[in-house]
Amino acid sequence: MKKLIFIFVLMCMFSCGDYIDKPKNLIPKDQMAEILADLSINDQATFMYPNSNLEAGTRYVLKMHNVKSNDFVESFKYYVIKEKMNGIAEDAQKIVLEKDPKADKYVKDKKSKAGTLQTPVLSR
Image (cartoon, rainbow, N blue to C red; front, side):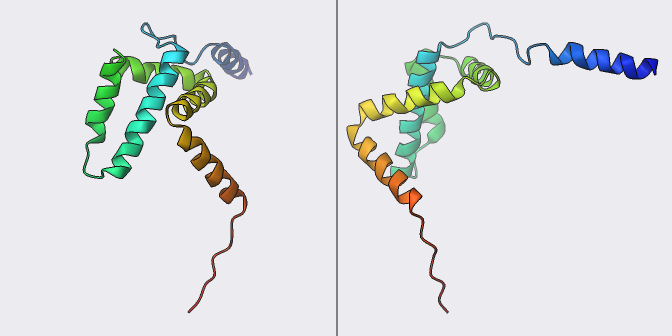
C-alpha cells in the first residue's frame, strides 16, 4: 500500500511541472511566423523546380532571418508543446497571403472544392 501511495505522489509531482524549459534563444512569435511563411514559399518552389535543393533553401531562409538552426528547432518544439503553434501558423498564412494575393483565391477555391468531394467512378 505504501508503494502505491508513493507512486501516486510521484505521478502528481511530475504531472504538475512543465514538459519543456524555455529555450535560451527563443525566437519571438512574430519572427517565427515570418520564418514559417518563408519556409512554406521555399517548399512550394521545390514543386515548381523539382531538381532544386530544399535544404539549401531552408538554410538561406534561416540565414536571412539571422537564426541558427538549433534555435529554430528548439523554439519550434517549445511552441508546439506549449500549444501556441496554431496561432503562429495562422499568422504565417496571413503573411503568405499578403505576399501573394493570388494565393488567397487559390486557397478559397481549394477549400470550396474540398467541401464537395465527389466519389470516384470505378469502371472496368
